[in-house]
Length: 153
Image (cartoon, rainbow, N blue to C red; front, side):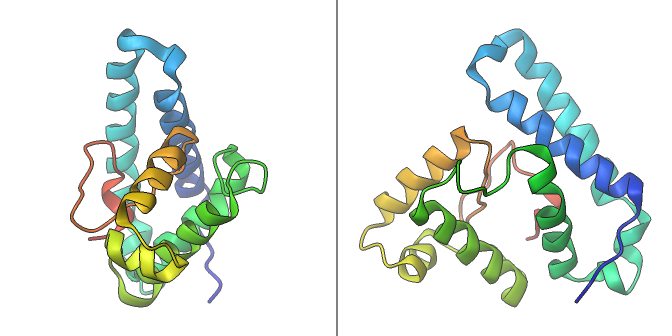
């Protein structure tokens, strides 16, 4: 399905990714961390409370994923070949498919099964590496304080 997102919603999502990328940068230091976290919270509220999500087109989890997929390549934090390994790309796709198909984040075990990894610790390792690149994959059972609240249940 094709979605037509309002320009201000696209801008807010792009700003969220950019702020998250800056927060993940070790050079920011402790002083910048609090400011970036506040900014993430403000942007998260702006995105989650946007009127678009109350329309029929915006009321589905796939609409939220479509917005993310639209914005990620423009922010430099997306899943481009230069940033992620094949395994990380497969993990990202598996997580997106789970959210799109079932409306919820996958468990680490589900991700492991989807990409053919035999160990959940291997998935955890890859997810940690991806986070350093600014790519956060939400998993069921591990709610992160820095996660985007409009990413789904």
